[in-house]
Image (cartoon, rainbow, N blue to C red; front, side, top):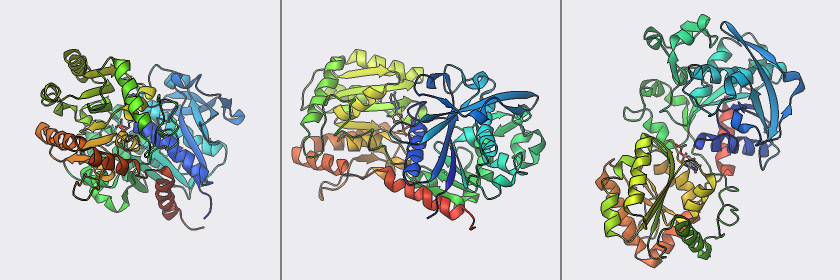
Length: 486
Ligand code: ADP
């Protein structure tokens, strides 16, 4: 097969800038496409926090490139830096005025413009270097205008004549809705006819929706989520459009980075372990308890949560059941998360009420995320919706049994435990109700009390293969189908 030129553009790339799964996926996809000898250019903004994390090499012909956005001209420059554990490079778009800010995302008035500039800078870099991409692969709302830009602003350039576009929806809950008065800044003032007229009439532009209209192919990060977003419950208003495009919508489940998340050689956990020797896991559990001043007892099951604290993650189900459960069961719970204040204050309260049983750490802490996966026996993910979810896969790999809601990627990656046959990897529940979650926890605790069955369950999970090596082939097959024959 010929090597493909793939222009991959993302607002987040791990480890440089990450708030969630998008960062992991874009880094892993680039790394594995590169490994399979495809020519990948991975673009992301040079946020303030990136500096100091990577040695930057300015690309001489791409310094202080002017870009007109409405009334204003912005200047961007490109520097490359190495993606860790790969010879793949990242192409950083430097535009201090837009990206040199405290966070990755902001509430600032020019938020849409920031990512429109990223999208256009990636395309203009292709032009300046005369590099004709076979595929432009954009991700989530931030870069979802790229297919439209190619059809309008850059339609004159033959360089892109054979370029095909893929838009991946990592989370349909974030659509990038901005005021139609911004069209000029986005360089789309003269392209109003291409936009969703109903939205325009109501004074809005929706980035993701625009991408859904113009990308040649759409993907999302699990088969179940691909089906769910075509329905009223999960489509977030885009279900009708997605149904119209269902022939071009594909679910490709995310892989996990098996190098970073490998209990055999994870430098971030206190003791290594593997499926046939779990003594290290016990040491991890003990260390986790000690770190947070929890009473350590091998026999007391330790539950872990690592999560963005948002409505999506289904944490509303917990207050109705946790205090009762914690009073009744000799169990432990360690929670790591950042996000909405109300969840943070709830977990703070819970840790205060059960100081020997519950610990909560607010914030983002990658090392602790690894330690929780390694030290916990069970992992809670009661998500309201979950496009793919990575944590349940990490937890399977680390021998922590997931308890998840049967939705999106959780449904595709966790198989229900079947005690009669000794098959399955975790516990699932359907209805978004505290009782349903409680029932799943109860079922899990029953198996916990049977050592042999528990060991089997843990082994089943640890034997799962979620490698990118396999998943990346699905993307390559899609790209190959899209590219016109020479
Ligand atoms: P989402 O993308 O919706 O946040 P995923 O499960 O797909 O959910 O991915 C979450 C990623 O972010 C995982 O790699 C997880 O370990 C990480 N993560 C989430 N919250 C935290 C946190 N507070 N500290 C460290 N890592 C976190």
